[in-house]
Image 1 (cartoon, rainbow, N blue to C red):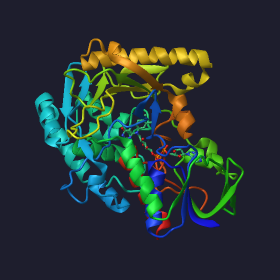
Image 2 (image 1 turned 135 degrees about the horizontal axis):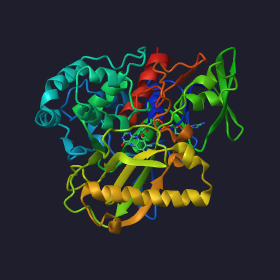
Image 3 (image 1 turned 90 degrees about the vertical axis):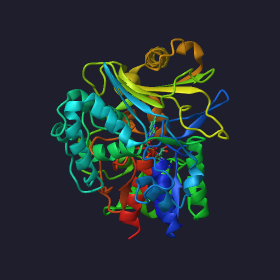
Length: 462
Ligand SMILES: Cc1cc2nc3c(=O)[nH]c(=O)nc-3n(C[C@H](O)[C@H](O)[C@H](O)COP(=O)(O)OP(=O)(O)OC[C@H]3O[C@@H](n4cnc5c(N)ncnc54)[C@H](O)[C@@H]3O)c2cc1C
């Protein structure tokens, strides 16, 4: 049998693309290497606790009565998922904390606007001009080249501190580029985080994954788990089939891959001439998840983006981790309803990590390093949350490193956000092989699903 389209990867972009294609009658099969769906955003059980492997928050919150043109509203319509099915709960508030100054934001943009007006008076006018410019910017143009966001922002805002504070959350949640971002990506993340804001499905990522998996089944699509793709066979610039790790061959008219750019090309027998020159992703993270004996007393913030040094450095660190900046997320601090099942009391701390260093340690040293980093990040979180005995409240620690990311998702260098150069139109050197997800350029939970849909619409539903 020949499928209309094989989708490599059952992460959020692959699942969304699969639903879209199946709705239009295409015969599709999603091939996922692992036993669980979700890729970077999956879930697992450890010592009886259900833990989301990625979820801090979904971006792009919109209320049920919000504009129909909002990205999340459009996304749900295209996937035929009812708004209420996700049971979204909004963040309490989040903070950007830098030395001597802190900016608080909620899902109401006016709150951040007022914070900036009060704390950065001289730059307020420039900030408003930047905000207007961003509102009118075509960030979804698939043919635009890289434009330095640092440069564009500096044309509006004079304060390096405010600039760094605005960049910090946007980079942590979506930049594959060191110390800068593509302005289109900046515009997307600015809207996703500051203008629309954070939420989560009441029960975590499993709600979304179950909905997506059910939609695929209802629409006649197929999902095969534990089915890694080992090779893509092609002839005269056209892919004909894939070979699975089991040795089985599956043929298709088109292939949509969410595995990543380099990762997908690595599967091709015939690689493009520039393969060695395509820049590899470098941005990797260590995240410590601490399950607590009870919720943190008096601590209400949903997410803190922190930086303790004079300048914010977002780059591959020299040491195993760089604890000067990072993200602290408390999944319990969303606006839950009384009937909601609550996540286990938990804190998640994410910092930048050097993938080369993590890669080279032998297993026993790797374990020691991991334990040391968990302790260090917990002490950082203790400082920012103001909970002095945070370590004493932790009853289970789990830590993922760049090696964990590579093992569970195949992303080389543990690069969560993939290659620094995105392939916005999703095309590869093979005429019927397309990229979606991380390396197409729309990142995060909402972004990767939009990516799957956009590329399916663009190339496979004409
Ligand atoms: C720790 C962490 C926390 C995050 N937190 C958030 C958050 O709070 N909010 C947010 O919006 N975003 C978050 N993200 C980012 C978000 O998870 C990703 O941007 C998004 O899930 C990417 O989806 P994707 O489909 O593009 O890629 P992936 O999730 O990487 O999916 C690719 C899939 O392809 C499979 N695959 C790879 N190679 C093969 C092969 N050869 N054969 C078969 N299958 C293959 C992989 O197993 C994987 O399932 C987080 C990411 C991480 C790592």
